[in-house]
Image 1 (spheres, protein in one colour):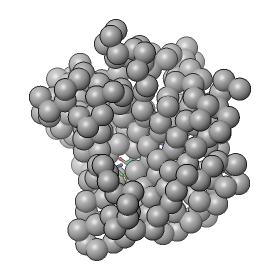
Image 2 (image 1 turned 60 degrees about the vertical axis):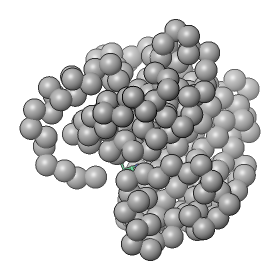
Image 3 (image 1 turned 90 degrees about the horizontal axis):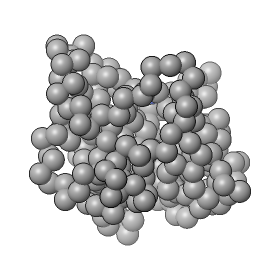
Image 4 (image 1 turned 180 degrees about the vertical axis):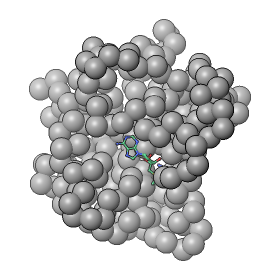
Length: 228
Ligand SMILES: C[S@@+](CC[C@H](N)C(=O)[O-])C[C@H]1O[C@@H](n2cnc3c(N)ncnc32)[C@H](O)[C@@H]1O
């Protein structure tokens, strides 16, 4: 997602500080359990992670709809994260619980930041497709990323994946199978399927679906996670 540099971006992000996790500015941070970033009474609840949250519509909607979970949304572009933070702040009254946090970071360093078995569920929504073959390793469903996710998810943890991109979906389904993930379900037309119940739309999803594009989705399970 490209965008012009936000005026007063740093101040605008600072104004949402209560929603932002600040990572230690060291080259080798000590990995933490992300549950610690939520209120004490919620620290025994599952943490869900979204990578590449964009403008934050999904994170905001999911946190409001699922008060039983802690939701952590990661975005690597600060100016985009700024919009997500502002949206989440504006919608605070719609969340029954204080269960939403953001982190501005690149997922390539996920396992440096977070301890093994940190998350029960991971969400990848409309991830950048990186269509050129030479860039396949940058796709968030490439097996190198799956290796990281396996460490970070609890055994039996779930990966939820949605995309408009036909080629990325085909590539990802192959990667998931090669990696030995269990395919719980998949659909090439989420919005006209039984799996759409409870679906929270992302900004990209809304855009593509409103132009008539079918949305691919899949749910995968990591049978053996970090603790095994
Ligand atoms: C195509 S946009 C989709 C945004 C949102 N998920 C949606 O569906 O509306 C992909 C987003 O993922 C972010 N992203 C891509 N690679 C990332 C990475 N390695 N770590 C964190 N964020 C990433 C991009 O900056 C961009 O905001």
